[in-house]
Amino acid sequence: MEDTYAEIRTIGRIFGVPDRADRLIAGLKGRVGKAAAAVEGEPEVPVFVYDSGDKAAFTAGGRSLGTELIRLAGGRNVFADLDDVFGDVSWEQVVARRPEVIAIYDYAGAGSVERKKQFLLSRPALADVPAIRNKRFVVLPLTATLVGIRSAYAVEDLARGLHPRASGDRHGRAPGPAGRTRDPDARRTGRARLAGTVTVLAVLLVLSATAGLAIGSVHVPAGQVWGIVTHALGAGWTEPDWSGARETIVLDVRAPRVLLGAVTGAGLAVVGTALQALVRNPLAEPYLLGVSSGASLGAVSVIVFGVNLLGPVSLSAAAFAGALGALLLVYVTARTGGRITSTRLVLSGVAVAAVLTAVMDLLLLTTDRGNEARAVLAWTLGGLGGVGWGALWLPGLAVLLGVAVLLAQSRNLNLLLAGEEAATTMGLDVARFRARMFVLLSLVTGVLVAAAGPIGFVGLMLPHIVRLFVGGDHRRVLPAAALGGAVFLVWADIAARTVAAPMEIPVGVLTALCGGPFFLWLMRRDARRGTGRGAA
Image 1 (cartoon, rainbow, N blue to C red):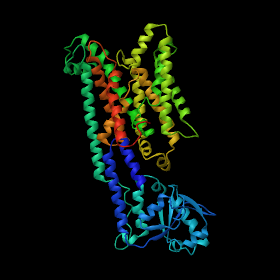
Image 2 (cartoon, one colour):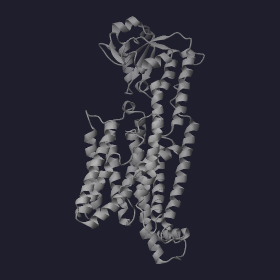
Image 3 (cartoon, helix red, strand yellow):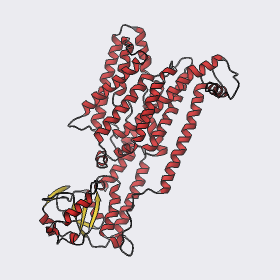
Image 4 (tube, rainbow, N blue to C red):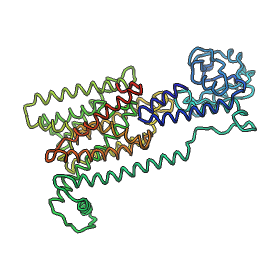
């Protein structure tokens, strides 16, 4: 169980909620302690753990978590002297050790437990075994024998099965499984917190968009902003009392910019949220895998060489190609022996990003077109200026698609937080899921980089901030992160336009000024907590 508690502490540190992790551990220890106290003083029940096998029995040994769970529940694994996690034993040894209860591993397959029962009951050699004679079986879910919170629930269920009178009611009936249902009050509290957070962020987004349309070198009162917008939408709530120049500034200059900022902020935030879960690294963000560098190189190539084969979508298409190429290179580099570890993935992403950035710098140094070089330099710093309505549909569609898919996959993202082994046991094909998600996240990032340039650290900061308010469940984090990212980038763009007016600062510079210290703080926090994960 100590490994379980350590894993929970690690996840709590990764997502910045150590206090919640400590409370969860305290609750689990309380459940285990209560189950152990209920059977204290009862005689140990000899238990044989059956996993599989026909000619020999594949069973749990003394180094397995199942053996510890049985001990905590007041039992004794008859093969605890087997110095291994699992091992084969003969049926003759099973008969000789006379187990009173047989614990059957449940692989969550249709009828798997019942088939194993019938197999054991049908063997004549086992007829004299007390557990077979009395038909005493308990089910041990395979997921409970991996590091995770289900281990504590398994102790309760085992205690009921091994000592029904001690842990059940006065008639010896064991109560129904505990720990499988959530506290209704806690569920309502979580939903209320999510609803409150999303409502506040939605209101902030509306106010931020209003400010983005009003603030600039030409100030437009908020009332006029709403009048111009509603009049353009055909509502006509007020009579036009503004000049044509102001209407042009609001609708054709600032509105596309504000919308692109909101879409880009939302997209980068959800991509960062998903990446942190996929690689189980709190420092992950959309640029971790070198995807941004690949998209930047593709877009820079179009600008420098003047390629315009696809017309107005040439830049986006090149960014797509660059992002996918970078993803493929990172994937191939990180994949060894058919598996990808988080450490190899992160290191491969950093290395690929460095190489692609060097190639991009080489293009800039060798080009003989000064205008193109200046345009590339401005683009690589990230910015939302000069965008028109025609450039919004592609990033908007990409972000909507990305958010929808990620919300549909939020359960699988949650499973990855418990570790690859636990996620695999719960039925998730981790390698395939990660590959699909990496492609999706790279495509979303490529589109956003093509539209706004490489804007960093939004995907790093916002997931950590919103988790403080809604917790770590991705069903709650993703929508909150999207709204929070939109609000943040809209205000970053307002600052970029006003801080050094009439000169405009690239918005990527401001996000880096905010994100750099945040990144350093995260590394120092993890170092103080002894995780050592910041270096990854």
